[in-house]
Image (cartoon, rainbow, N blue to C red; front, side):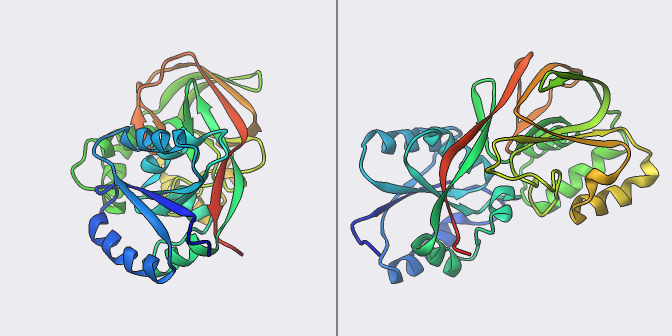
Length: 296
């Protein structure tokens, strides 16, 4: 390894359900064994990771920027690096870790050190909702509602997702929406509409099983309202990679989406709930990011 190459870690100390400061102390030991030259910055508020990444990028000095946190932290850092020559690595410490799971980025401290030392940069696409980026998934409907509830919760992790899912599911009536996929119009009541760059939400829940992060397209999964009696089978399909086989599920691979109207205010981008100005223009940016992935 070139000792002169610097790794700049941008760490969210409160991402996910675990103690990231304690994890970082453990990881530092393994990084030292690999003789990794590093610098560390901790985020202090929402949006701070983007500021730190932009500040580093402005220095125009060669370095690999490393995001340590969940999908939201990764989004903040990666958004600052879109269409730049900078290389980005990711250490998954969130609740879902969708992109990291898809790309088989390790989560154990010992394996992470090896990933950073031996991983190679590959180009991946980005999605863009109006003027904001996403790298895993975005959309509206039930998953956006859960993202909103999750954002107001004091607890994190898979258990919280399950709790809010069960709490909301049987009262959920769907959303009325009108949107266009590469110019073709869709309208009606939907359980959820997900726009995917990666193939899963996280926790191996595959909402777009055929999605690829480097194909220059976005995969749209439209799930219409379905009989509640089918719920166990829908859950099995989501984790079994066959959600697209139901008659009430339609998938499209597109380059442009226009959302004209949605009856719900809830929208999510890489798992974080937010407001979305309508009409919304969503597009794909091919080869937008230089992401370090493990050697096969």
